[in-house]
Amino acid sequence: MLNSLKLFVAAALVAVASPLIAQDTATPEPAAPSSQEFDLGTPVDDTAPRPGEPYVREVFGDWALRCLVAEVGEDPCQMYQLLLDPSENPVAEISIVPLADGGPAVAGVVVVVPLETLLTEQLTLSIDGGEARRYAFNFCNRAGCVARFGLTDEQVALLKRGASGVLTIVPAAVPDQQINLTMSLIGFTAGFDAATATAN
Image (cartoon, rainbow, N blue to C red):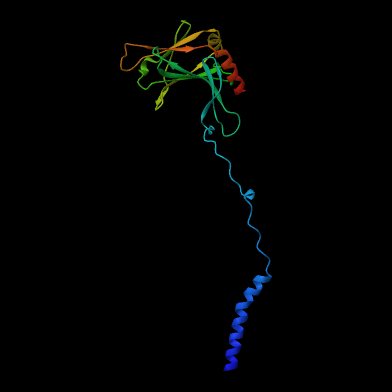
């Protein structure tokens, strides 16, 4: 019995000592990595435009070449101008984009006016006091009511030669009055040529 007890104690001591011996003979653990081995990340630029967001690429007189960030390929661009009333309040905006499909319209126009506009009176546009043309509104959304129409090569040439245009709308609250919005044509030619270059 005593011999058995001695053997059990000896075996227990060997079992406890074995890991200690193994630790002494094991390969030492590698040193902790230095700070230079960790990626510290790249700062996120929250000011950079994201896909679908507009930005102004260039300004030509009173026209801006406004583009949208594309997910792939070239950013589509259009000419843009904010239109003010006689009291210098922003009322409407106009965008013009060159068209290259060979149809009768060489440029497409989008005009956005306030929701309180009397749509049945439509939108009129005249250049340098010349004959006015009338355009229907297509739809309204939260941003306002939208008129979309095309310009012929002759009309674009008239804009390039002109000094200013007047867009006229009628407020629904006072249908016997008109609001005349001056559209400057300063920089139109250079802006249209730049927009055409980005479209090709």
